[in-house]
Amino acid sequence: MSADRDFDVVVIGAGAAGLYALHRIRGLGLSVRVFEQGGGVGGTWYWNRYPGARCDVESWDYCYSFSEELEQEWDWSERYPTQAELERYFNHVADRFDLRRDIEFDTRVEQARFDESRNRWIVRTSTGATVSARYLVSAAGCLSEVHKPRITGADTFAGEQHHTARWPAAGVEVTNKRVGVIGTGSSGVQVIPQLAKRAEHVFVFQRTAQYAVPAHNRPLDDETRNELKRSFRQRQAFKRTTRMGMSNPPPAVSSALEVDEATRTDILEASWRRGGLAFPGTFDDISTNAESNRYVARFVRDKIRARIEAPEVADALLDIDHAFGARRPIVDIDYFEAYNRDHVTLVDVGAAPITEVTPRGLRTTEGRYDLDVLVYATGFDGMTGALLSMGIRGVGGLALRDKWADWPSTYMGLVASGFPNLFMITGPGSPAVFSNVMLSIEQHVEWIADCLAHMVKHGLNRIDANPEAEAQWTRRIHELAARSVVGKTNSWWTGANIEGKPRGVTMYLGGAHNYRAACDEIAADGYRGFVLSR
Ligand code: N01
Image 1 (cartoon, helix red, strand yellow):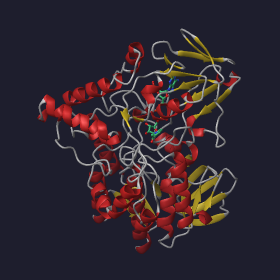
Image 2: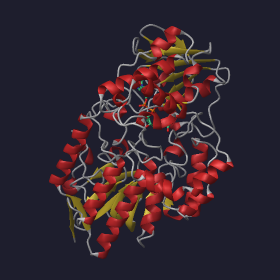
Image 3: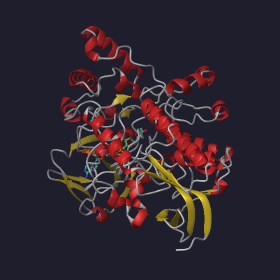
């Protein structure tokens, strides 16, 4: 296959990771081309336009930190930024750093093959173009490949049906309509109260009950914004020393068991009042100590129960079969209160599963629900879905899909042996979305850019992982997961939502700060565990 154009680097995706990769790598004087399947920048925040979509990491943490000028000139309006505000932010970044001229929109990477004779990737896109690049950088995202379960009769539905992650930009009219929502993960929990504001009736099809922590969203006033800008450097430095890469204060005491009941309750109450993703870090040992976890889980259940008027609805919403934090924590705004409205009905499809979609609505083993609009809030093929949706082939024509058939082995979540010159931003084996993903993206992009600079400086053309180093790192991922409650139940965190996918937590759970230190040490040690050659 001959290439129409040659670049030093091809980047896949123009979300948060792709934009920064383009900026940083272009800064090395290398030629870069970005292919983006969407019509605009922002990735997750381009696609997830459903009502209520907003980030559950605070705006002052969910932003780039590489440019102090950018931080100083941008004003966040709320504690948690909405999809619209984030989309504006990423567009501002694209304009401010003049990124658009190197991005091809509405263009999907369909195939990428490593040409061993030239140490170059040959990349074919959905427009029919073929380009070559010395390096291929995947910024395709951890949660971008949509998961829509196959339900019998799905195509026969006569009303409108939409996945939350493919919500039409023009919106969906639900006023006076009967709406069904399948799924009560982070997306379902955000969209349900919003749909309930206008719909005639909302039926929520819940298969697994889940914990949620209140967001306590609020507008940001000038004083708060000024203080955030003043403390920029100090906060950035602090974030890099923490497990999750966020500027939440460290826990007051490390174990829930180290204090008496009254003190523990006071600490939990204060943390609950603060809300958000800091809550799962109220004590250091919530994810590793079963007894600590039980205290916290009981506290959360009691708090949720107090928000729901009908005891039988509370029972169904709180019929939770896993430890607190075993699934990705959910942050909610007015979610449980939605069930206090007469026109919102919880349907327990764990007890009575969905059997089919019909032209008129949805059937379960126990009932029939007539619907005008059906919403799939059914999530994503996380961590590996996007990478595997492209036909990536490495040395000897090996397909990434085959290499990863049993487990997505990587070295440091950055590279996979047998796929030279392919870098992954927040790939499996890195902290990825088990951390403030914006900071993790920056850390990966900076590490990759430094590595590329090293390659250029030393006249090197090829970098691969040593298979033994990769195997050791994979064992480390498994060891850390074995010690944690994280993933001790089925969810996208363990790949359990996708048929045939290997089961287990693929993210590095040892803390973003430790991971950063390990990556830095490896580079300082002459790229230990990598094989670099001409
Ligand atoms: O997806 P999910 P999501 N029949 O996989 C249900 C990030 N995010 O889009 O639990 C019936 O969590 C499924 O049921 P079950 C965040 O990292 C962040 O909500 O498998 N139900 C579950 O209830 C998050 O974790 C933000 O039994 C079916 C739901 O669909 C991740 O994205 C906002 C079903 C899927 O939940 C994914 O969240 C949104 C079936 N056949 C997302 N198939 C914020 O920043 C699936 N389900 C706030």
